[in-house]
Image (cartoon, rainbow, N blue to C red; front, side, top):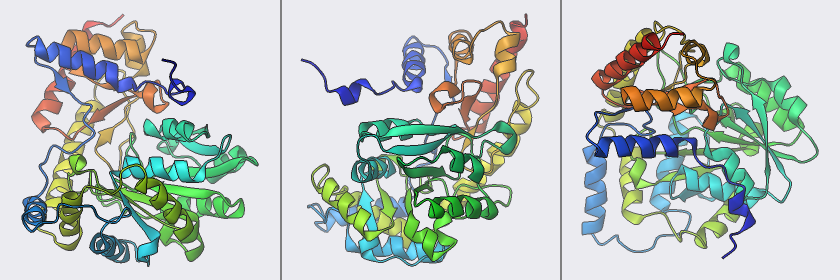
Length: 394
């Protein structure tokens, strides 16, 4: 059977080959250390688990409204009011089956064939693929390493054409961990408002910020920017609920209504017991979120110091998320490799350390290292990495 053209445009995930090889080596009995984790290594807080179990015991096991339970929408509205001082109504909120599905639904709702979406590089791997699946064209602008991988308002302005529909903002960022300041967000917002560009603000890592950094949502800067922005968020990272698949969008009611109609024909509704767990996540607090954040901060500070002492490796210190995104092009060159991807593959084969090559994020000189794993494992992985580099000096 001939497959649809839309799937032929997709770029295979750069992490899949590494993940598959790491799994194969583990099955052969090798001690493989994986630094590719995109999820916290903490369990979901017990009070959230208890709320989900209780909901099932009480008979809440049926369909819910497509856009989410009214009580969950209220909890999300309360979260925005407390954290960002933004007022939303129920008609401005869509709950979906994870932030990834919410983003997918958004692009399906707003993009026509040939519409352009400006995407800063490095980017999260699914942004361009989801844009392409909706018939849109990703337009890349480079976030330079000397600016902590962030793009500027001038870069955005130069990339805008008559076909530009949206700009994707991810702060804190996956894969770089970089964050935009309030002033930077203001200048970006001015450009988007002037040219009527929708801002898609992915804030999934907002709770995981370090060294005194403060997350600012572009939507909280003015009422005009709130109307021009669709905020994407969820509980996967903040509450270690990746497998629960609850994300949400907040923004213009017309867009939210269109997304709701689409969702009703794809997932019917987000998983019911997961919604009840999320209500608890946003209406109670046992301190576990801060405990996890503090643990990540401690790991970051310890790992960063060690990483930056390795020959041929340089790294911008991140302010959020749980990734380091070092430039290893010099190390790969010192070891005689023509590409970072080949270097990463060789390290996995010889030292049994699985890194994620930056090529999949639009940054071929870098690798992504997750510190959402035990500090001892990260430390051992960096020891092996340094040993590989020293052993293969040309």
